[in-house]
Length: 131
Length: 311
Image: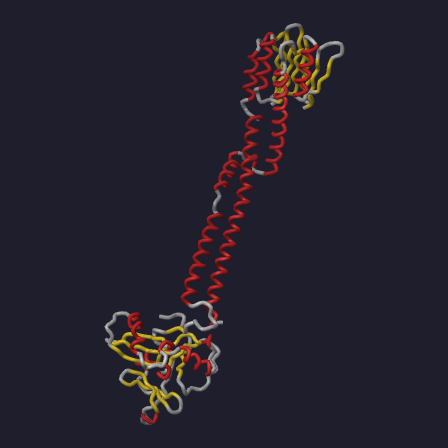
C-alpha cells in the first residue's frame, strides 16, 4: 500500500472534492426547488390576502352606509341587516339611475339582485346584496 | 519531535546482515557501507546551498554521479556531505526480505556518531566504530577482543533528521511534490464547495418573507385552509367582476334610438330589454349584442330586443 501512497492521497483528495461538489450541487438544487416552492406560496398568500382584503373589507359596511345618502329618503326603501342590504328606489330620473348603479357597482358587495324597470320616463330600481 | 516515527523500530543495515523477516513499517539506519562521506568547510550558510555544490565535491569518486543523491548537515564549522544511491540501498533491502512499503525513513550511522561510543559488532568479521568522529566499518581483527562489545542498538539511536525514500520509481505516477500540489488544490476546491453549499443552505431570504406573511395572517398558516380560502375568494371575485363587466357592457351598447326598458340581474343570469325606434336601429343593436356574446331575442311584432347572458 505504501508504494501507492501518493496515488491514494491524490485519489482521496479528489474524491473529497467530488463529494464536496456533489454536496454543493445538491444544496443548490434543493435550494432552487425550495425557493420556487416558497415563491409560489408567497404569490398564493399575497393573492389570498388581497382578495380577502377586497371582499371582506371591514370598511364595506361604512361604504354601504354612505351609499344610503345617494338618493333622497322619499324615493328610497332601505333595509340593512347583518351585512345584507335590500333597497328599492321609485321614480328615479336617468341621472339618478346612473348615480345609483355606478355607486353600487363600485362597492365590493355580492350582487344578488339588480332590477331596473322603466315606467314612462322614470325608473324603478331594486337592489339586493350582501358582503 | 517527529510524531510519525514514534514507535517505529530502528533497524541497522550492513552488508553481512542475515535475511530479515519484518512485516511492519521500520526505520532504517545505514552503515557506512551504503554511503560515502566527506567533511568539508564550505563557504555557504544554508544546507540547500551545500547540497547544490555536493556533486562537485564528490566528482570523480563515482562512475556515474547522476545516480547519487546527497544529504548534508552542519557539524560545528564543517559540513557533513553524504552521497548515497537509493536504488542500490533499496535493492539490498529488498534482497534481505524487507518489503519496500515497509521502509519508512532512512538514517545514516554518521548522524548518530555520538551514540556509538564503543565499537559495535556487525556480522562475523566487521565492527562499526567511530574514528575521529566519523563512523567506519573495520575488520574485527583490527580491534582487541575486549574492545568489541555487544552494543545495545535501540530506537534511541534515531537521529532527528531523516530522508524519505523518493517515490519516483516506475510504480509511482505522481511525485511527492505533485501529490502535495494537486491534493492541496483538490482540498481547497472541496472546502470552497462545502462553504458555498453551506451558504446556499442558509439562504432563507424568501423564507423570512413567507414567515412574516404567515405571522401577519395566522388563519392562512395551513396550506389546506389557504387553498380553500383562495378558491372561495377567487370564485367570488370572478363572478362579481363578471356581473359588473356585463352591466358596463349593457350600458355601453345603448346609442341614439335605443332605450333600456328593463334590466334584471340574479344569481344565474342577466337580461335586458331595449326599445328601438326603428328596424335598422334594432338590427344594429342586435349585431352589437351578438358581438358582445349576448343571446339576442326579438320581441314579435315590435322592433324591441331582449338580450341575455348566463353567469
